[in-house]
Amino acid sequence: MYWRRQSDQHRMDDAHPIIGGVANMETRSSVHVYLDWVKGRLDEVDATLASAEGCTAKLYGDARAKADRAVAGMHQARDAFGKFMKEQAEAGQETLNA
Image (cartoon, rainbow, N blue to C red; front, side):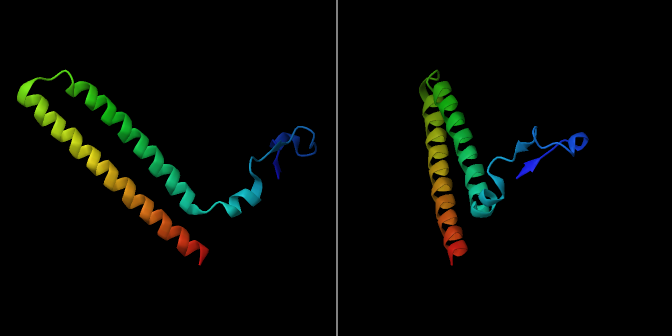
C-alpha cells in the first residue's frame, strides 16, 4: 500500500510505502496498543523510582527512614500495577483468540 502527495497523483515512482501495510494492522490486536502504553508508564515509574532512591541516599536519620518506606511502597504499587496489567492483557488476548 502506498501514499502519494496530492500534487503527484499521476506518478508512483516517488510513492512511499506505508510501513507495515494493512496486513500488519489487521494482525496487530488492540491489546498491543495498551500493552505498549503500559510498558511506557512502567518505564516512567522505574525512572522516577531511580531518581527517588538517589534522593533518599542524601537524607539522614528519621527522614531517610520515612523516604525509604515511601520508596518501598512505590515499588510495591508498581509491581502490583504491572502484575494487574499483565493479567488484564492475558485475559484480553484470550478473549480476542476465542
